[in-house]
Amino acid sequence: MFGLMMDTPLLISSIARHADRRFGDQEIVSFTIDNPRHRYTYRDAFARARKLANALAQAGLKEGDRVATLAWNDYRHFELYYGVSGSGLVCHTINPRLFADQLVFIINDAADKFLFLDPVFVPVVEAILPRLDSAPSFVILTDDEHMPETSFDAVSYEAFIADASEEFEWPEIDEKSASALCYTSGTTGNPKGVLYSHRSTVLHSLGVSLPDVFDLCATEVVMPIVPMFHVNAWGIPYATALTGSKLVFPGPKMGDPAVLQALIEEEGVTTSAGVPTVWQGLLAYLDATGKRIDSVKSFIGGGSAVPYSLMQAYEERYGVNLVHAWGMSETSPLGTMFHTSPALEKAPAEVQVAARASQGAPPFGVELRIVDEDGTELPHDDDAVGALQIRGPWIASGYFGGGGEGSFHDGWFDTGDVAAISPLGYMRIADRSKDLIKSGGEWISSIELENIAVGHPGVKQAAVIAMPDEKWQERPLLVIVREDAGDATSAPVTATELLGYFDGKVASWWIPDAVAFVDAIPLTATGKISKLDLRKQLGAGDLTVER
Ligand code: ADP
Image (cartoon, rainbow, N blue to C red; front, side):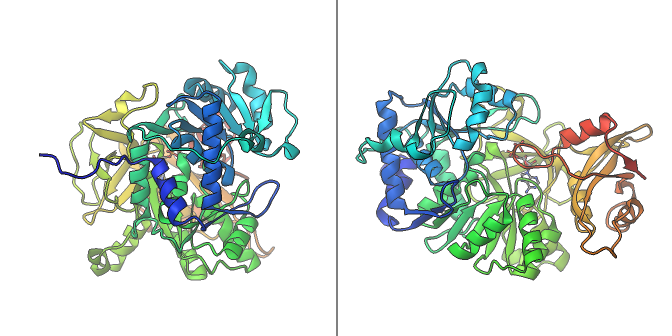
């Protein structure tokens, strides 16, 4: 027997309608290339999103067609999120930092009909245009006055929507319809498209808004420093509209701590999300300038492991709770986030520290398990380490256009991460399976070693990769960017000193064999340490290894 309740579809347009009615006066502030403080309201944003929906319909686009974006976080990108998805089209966000080959692959694979781009990305498009199967229509995210020179036909965004009506009836499509498309960075093989649905997006937005997750409500001020071109800025542009939080977009300044601090202070930001490198950069800036971020209650850190020493630094020096989260493109991205519990509060201090340092626990909607090589489930005893699998209504069930079949089995998605789960349910990522170091048949966690290394005051950044070894097959190599010496009296940290620093912190056979000091560690298009490139540098003899 079915219940007798309304079958109202969960649509992105339902978030827009709610925010428009309920939080119309709430502000959206953006730093853009031509205006360091663009300011308007949710009401203004959704009126323009409806104009955009009309303009796209007039251009002849049909339900399910892909509309691509190549843009930083700002109000026009926000309008695209709603105008495109809300009208039944698929908002395909593209990472502009990808290599040309990947961009060509992605645009051809998605068969984008339109491409909306920031003026700064005109050269990126010009470089790949000859290699596209069929050119999309181009709209540049600016007005006629600021239109850049282009070698291709393009109109300005403001001109594109200017004559379209503000009246638009968001269509009642199936909630399982595709809403957005985002390709994984493709560190192995070609990028794979993750195709989100309206239902998955609305449920994910509800999930991340919960008190033990991002804790959003209408009095919060949220600044996503995670790009809107990567996993929907962790769902923040939807969740903030759903809860009525004020939104602050840093535009092209996501890597500029001075702008981030100014936005935080002037706009009263209470919470923000970003990868650890963003938090490291901001901390160094605050420490050096003595500036404050007193409005902030919490920062969310994820995308790669957040060192516990960084959480402590924020807590002690700025009263900010830096909370650890884990996820990936295929998981929308929220998989786990740290939150406390009565049981944890009663646990011994070291258990509490380990839980805070861990990647956290799944919220309602997410189930996790760890399995061994035969697929047998492993116990949650904080000791057993296995392949991390996940399932739930906002977890991918396949890729756009197929592929990656090996990752989907028995209704679970294999994340490619290896992890342990504690008796209290906290999950600890040991490594990506391809980054684990296998020494004499036993594995060593590169993440754990990196977390220890960055706790040394002489270390700015650390990465651990496998170094081929005749006896043990692989041994850990520590790649280090030194902290700039603040005063001439403190000598730069040496290899011996660093290796000695691991004594007593890990089993002796986990201690790296050698150190390579470098000026910079290569990053991927999403700003994470590129171990693939480091391994290539090692293979090519480009790293000077000190023992
Ligand atoms: P890619 O980095 O390949 O583009 P994603 O952005 O989807 O793909 O990243 C997902 C991966 O990032 C996860 O599988 C995991 O390995 C890593 N990751 C994300 N958050 C964390 C975290 N808090 N700690 C450790 N690793 C993390």
